[in-house]
Image 1 (cartoon, rainbow, N blue to C red):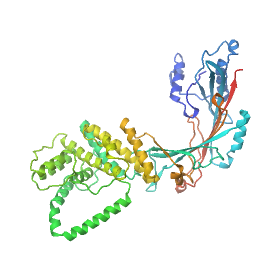
Image 2: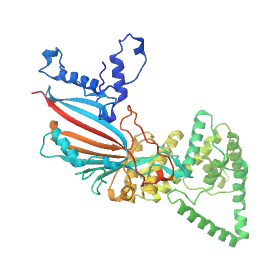
Image 3: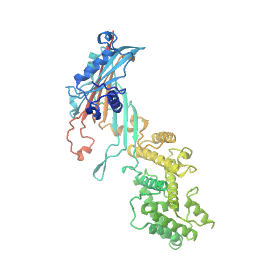
Image 4: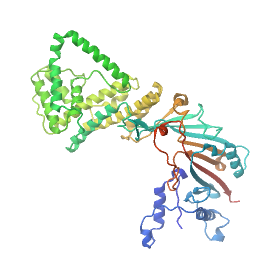
Length: 540
């Protein structure tokens, strides 16, 4: 009969490791039926108890002569997967040897049950009853309680009357002592930690348009690396060349318009400023700038209109031809590093060399323009919000490393932006908290590769976010009842989850229609109840 061994808690069992142990133990089997990987088996409670009993006997020094078997050293912690077919819904049985020096002096037995889903909260037991049950199992004079809770602060959002799920997730974990009732809301004295996981490209993000620019930048970088480019969908009805030609004509006519219609220009400027203010109000968390130079405007228009390599070549060739003829003398930001910016600077002094836009030169030139533009966007936001200094950003905006590394570091900086802006927009975190998050992300990404699935943690005072959870229902609520200390410490864990805590048992989930009521925070959640209890047997 197989024995499953793992070295983790029952709710986080390393099932791959357990499966490998099972397969290795049966590698000598000759039956053709065992050649197929049937996965881990769940045993009935009776068979699981037999395994635990044999495991215990193997450690009992007083039984070694009777059963002609004893463990020379403590065996690894044993977890036996159960099928929950008994009345209590047992899903795991565990046995853990306790040693004093090299000798096993006792065994702690663990029982894990899981039932649900439970909709009627009045059916939950009381804390006093749980304490009484714990004392009956472990005679003691005093017990202490410890509470844990997790709330989902982001969850599903509604976009155009549809529920939109994403990998972005912001949860908060609470820990506190002296639990007073089941499903108690964490007190304001709790220790709270935000868990922030943000997936770039989420349509809910205030910086979604900046992400689209980064995405186009990554397309160009991949094309430069492989020679093949998967062009995104065109957002402009006009051809790319016509769009760029309009930009050039606007630049050429700017001076003439200024001379002949100064009042109109001033009026248009006022309207433009008003529009900029309105835009800022509607997207106050996005790092939008009103000081785009010619190269950045070119990037903005080409990003929305090019659909082929030839489009890029034609557009850049058109710009270079007008620069060479001095039809235009556009202004650019000081410190711009793109090849086009350097050509513009040379055109001021009539020292611009002949340039042939061929091969992958066109893709590289456009990529450099995008890098310059996005770097300035990110610097504008982080410095403008006083979340960091230029010295701290130097790693991310360094132009002396190769182009591929520049793109990678900018990608990291964008992920930092998504994290900070999401917490600012959705949680309205204070400057102090956003500053701490920025520093934490910066330190992480200076030493680690890009990981958009990484969960960043931020300690926070409950009073800062209590409005987001105090009337909500937790996704996880847990209480520990603890007695004893050291090797004699014993716990009873009583836990509620909105999802089953085990995946090897099928639960009957009630059919709940997805309509407007399910999006209301006041609707009743149903929970799965997991109980972990233990007992200790000493070898006298």
